Length: 470
Image 1 (cartoon, rainbow, N blue to C red):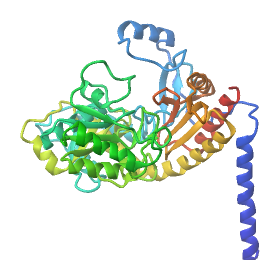
Image 2: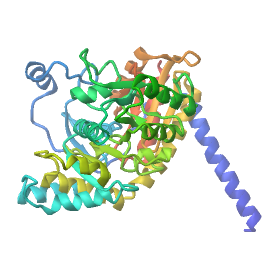
Image 3: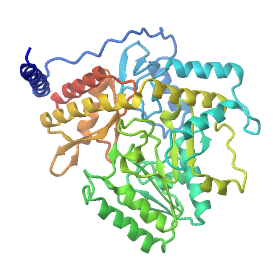
């Protein structure tokens, strides 16, 4: 075939595929979508049923615990991007990345590393040497830019952010911390002080912490104008703290806040302001790190900055209680003036599991995978936005996505009741999704990083079907 005819044929084929995609997005959904095939059979479950578990939970666990769904699910098994309930029903897990799973539930490489280390030595204090923590620290440091080469291991994101705040205050000699509104940084007294979401905070004094406007391109008063948001940080430091600040902390993508990506260029401007005031800059990568955004390995890299301290947890251990703080030798030196110790931080089992996670992410090229699958997911969701007026905003990168539901696009009125209805319908269709945002009207899509394009299509088709009845 002549080359000009070959190009014409390709163009027609591409246009045809594009048209079929558009027609599919705008078509009336007549039947519920079918979950993609998966070659795995869950083991029979003979344990407590959901109602029995719920009764024990009410009786013996703290009443502040909440659960999803009017009839809570009893999840008993997981495999890669899927979960199974007590009856063996399979669900696509589109929230696992929020709740710590990165590689996939029970990834064989990670499970094997944990089991092999558990057979040899489960725990020993760091006053003795062990190869697992040293090898893992080296591997993690190799993923960091600049002079971020000193690693501290802890057990959670809360502990990581507590330690980062302590570092900032000791290193600078100042006390005042600056954080963003709509942020979430942990559940301890100190990190709840950094958190500026009323649903998480208790009515107790939270120490020397100030909050500045969230540079939210969708809801923020200045839209995507990062210069005006940054000026408020400058004013806060100049007039609210007498020019003295210990540190500034921010998620690059606000997770619990509704998958909100900060206005472009914001962190570069603010980091300059904070450093000139003698403070250090902390990047909370608990939800956005390890290649999840697709475009970059760390969320802060999307803003073209290098922090002084980086905190991470959740997906770092694929379900293990593991977190880390990475900083520079200069900042780490101040910690050597006293004993800094964490009983379980960097224990052999968690270190072996964490190292296995890094190897899996590299071996399976998960960053590129997140970029490819996330691009398709976002494209389809944006087509769906044109079909359903209730979708006010679709945002995110890679496999860190937010879909905000509104009853009025102009006023951006939160569709709280409708979100709850669709949320329940998605569960019935076999999709488990997260909720977030100030009003709980944002679907947080953050699946395991083995999530496929077929999974993405099923998720969007399920959302389309669930919304068609609203």
